[in-house]
Image 1 (tube, helix red, strand yellow):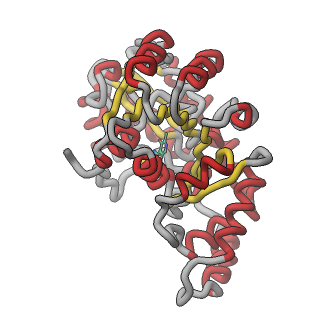
Image 2: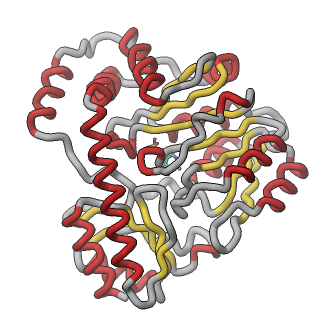
Length: 340
Ligand code: PMP
């Protein structure tokens, strides 16, 4: 296997990793600096972590009777779920193409991973999903909602059938919730075996590494048993609390990103040879005549995107474009047009 590869991005317009392109204003950065200077670095993380859990529960409108655990990014939570479910014969199931960490966490933990192909238009293949669940009885089913890299939400009726059929946990991963038109949060409390995962990364704090998972308190308590003590740094915790106090700043950024996403979609629809799929996230999946050529051409013009062609046969000649600032997007569109 290979370690998770991060592309070299120095000097490039970085549109490869679904980061929020906006930094905080100089004034907010100064205020944050003052707050961080007060943090006691000599102490292990303590009560402020519980305050962050409470602030995130309010932010997410977490249902009553649920509890929330934190991870060093949702990547860590995905690893902890695999660890918590590691009993002989356990398996993890997810649709493909999907977020690579679901399969990687299974592999690292020595669990079986079952990938179920999406349909060619990237919808859940209801029959194949239900058949695979019936056959393999997975301990965990992951549904990224919206999905990465296809950027779409699933049919809600199909989700409910999967949830009904799943014999173990179902994790709904809402990493891209700030850009999505729907969330599972209103439905999650109907079930005792469904967990909802989110992250502050796409909200605007990818560098801060805070992921969170909400679910029925008794269930979250079981998974919390495998969490390393003190997994959240005091500095990360304080930065996250600060960001939540300025939620409206991030909400405005998400709104701008959604508007830019619409503009990019309009421009892409006018580019001959380019097919773009609808998006509920801060990324757009496109198919071009030759993805390697387009990727290299864009990079030579100073724009880094992700070539996902080799991830899965359904993604042949596909690139994943992260939505950036208006200027970055204009540059990206020109680079794509010139590189087809
Ligand atoms: N879930 C999905 C669907 C993702 O695409 C990503 C990151 N790209 C993550 C989780 C992990 O996010 P983080 O570890 O930054 O919270």
